[in-house]
Structures are given as structure tokens and as C-alpha cells.
Image 1 (spheres, rainbow, N blue to C red):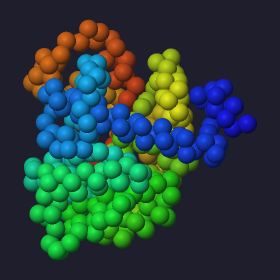
Image 2 (cartoon, one colour):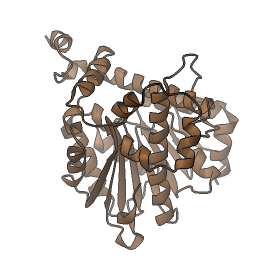
Image 3 (cartoon, rainbow, N blue to C red):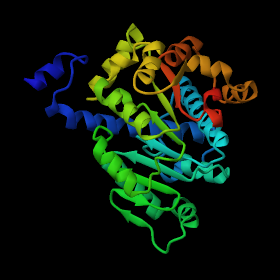
Length: 334
């Protein structure tokens, strides 16, 4: 019965029996995003000397509008992250939830902008793959070891814990397990904390994402939450996005919270955050430094600007703050 319901409509809620299949689809989106980023880096959109050690280079050319979309995403999240680090003078911690093959830890170390500790969480299967690469690639392992004062690193298949960096295999829908694993890796609830989710919450039910957002607001007295995600999913372009993912067995369980910029903002305010801001990615793209935008626009010819606009209007960057008045967290913007 559950299978026939899934086949009939991409908008039906998944049963618990189908959750394993959905999780597999979500893990597939991690691979897709990583490969797209690697491709964009390879043709010069931004500098990342570490991604090549984690992600294969696709032989398939990616469309210019996809590359520009990833460029805007990376720039937007990076701007907000660095603003938080500067406001706190790096006396803080970062929790990257659903981090995948993200390389931010290594890039921040190179820029002398590392927080007191950087945590990553993802599905155990994804974490296992990342840890295998870290273990076998000196370019990834050496910076971690350099910062670690002990003789040995705590590392097994699903967890790496070092002085300044931790990678944890956990399900973000299981908050007691998540909190327990973070605390075992010395998460400090008293430190100003930045939480980052990129295309993560949409794969949870609205109740599950609300619980995660609420847990973050309740756990950390001084905090900021960054969420990059789909938006305006009610229109025809949004429906096509949903259908395309559904065909790949990837169910957008939380799509109803992605109806508008206001629904995205409201979710944060309704779950314990004091301030919340949101921009669609076309607006964010228009605010990026003109010299940098001109540089990346010269990399490839874009045939249809309209397609880029349509794509960018269906993604947004949200950020929310709680506490931190003395640090000026409310002043952070893109």
C-alpha cells in the first residue's frame, strides 16, 4: 500500500517503511552537490584546494547557471560565517549539520579564522567515507593533527574527535542521540555557537525541522543559525523541482515550509529565534562584489539569464540570531 501511494504522487507524505529509501535519495543529493562544487572549483569559480581530496571530478560539464548558483551559495554562507567569527573574535564554535564533503574547516584554518572547535554531523555512511579520505590524504589529515595536542586522535568508522575539529555520524532527527554525541566531543553550550544547514531541513518533516531549530535555540544562549534552502516551491518551476527529485526516490518531506520567504523566516521566529532575515539567491547575487561577479561571469557564456533568475528565485539564504547583543550579532547581514 505504501509503495503504491509513493508511485502515485510525489507530494504524498512518506510512510515509515519508505524512510530508508528516502534517506538513500538524500545521501545521493550530497554526492550531487559535492560533484557540482568540485566542477565549479575546477573551472575557477572559487578557490578550494581541499575538495579534490574528497570528491571526484565529473567528466560531465555542468550548466553555467548551476555553477553560478553554487558560487552564490558558497559566497553567501561564507560571508555570514566569517561575519560571525569576526564578531565573536573566533571565541565560538560552529556546528555544520548535514555537512557532507564540506571543506570549510580547512579553508578557515588557512585564513586563521578557526573557531574554538568546528563540528560536522551527517549520516554515518557519509561520515565513514569522509573519514576514510581524511585518514588517507595527508593534505586533509595534517592540518587536523597540527592543531591536536594529544598523541593520538579519537577516530573510528563513524566519528573523529580532535582538539579543534570533530566529525560525527548521527541522524539529525534523533535529537537525544545528536546531543549525546556532540557532548562526548566536548560541545560547549556556553560558547557563542553558529549552526549551519544547507539543503537539509527540507528532507525532514516540518515537525522534525521545527524540533531541530527549537533545540538549537534552547541549547545555546548566544547563537546564530544559517539555513540555505529551496523557496517559492508552490509555483510551476517549484513543482518541477519536486517531481524531478521524487523520480530519483528523494522525497521533500518538508516542502510546505518552503512556500515563501516569509514562511522560511516565520519558521525560525516561531521556534525560539529572536531575529530572522531572508534573501532569495537572486537578490543575494545582486549584492555580491561587482568585481568578483564580473570575474566569474567571464568564465563561461550564459545563454539564458532568465533561467538563472528562475533558479535563483527558488533558493534562499536565511539567518537568525539569539542573544549576543554585546557582540552585535543582530548587525550581521549579507
